[in-house]
Structures are given as structure tokens and as C-alpha cells.
Amino acid sequence: MYEYRIETFHGRNTEDNVNKLALEGWRVIAVCPNMATGIGLIFTFERPLPEQE
Picture (spheres, helix red, strand yellow):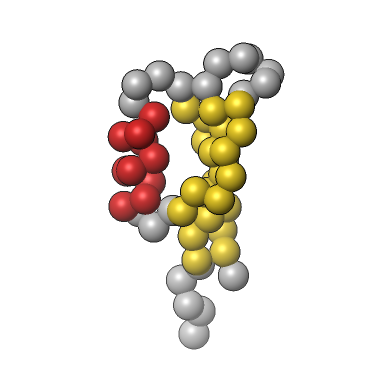
């Protein structure tokens, strides 16, 4: 099983934010432009859920 997260980033700190999430185990699975505001990108991330015993 996976959990998902959606974030919107814009500006010069986008790379830093994506790298911080990667360190937490999040993997980018999709990127699209933010058509609602016309500024930035919308990222969809996923990571595996911890194994349940």
C-alpha cells in the first residue's frame, strides 16, 4: 500500500522542497502546471506505508 501527497510549489525553492520530501521517502510520480493560478507546479508524491504486523 502507498500513501499520496499533493503539493504546489513555485519559485526558486521548488528544488529544495522536493529534495526535503525525498529525504522523507516521498517519490515524485506526476508534475503538472498549476492552471488555477497560472503560477507554479503541482507535484504528486507517493511513498510506501510502513509494513503492518
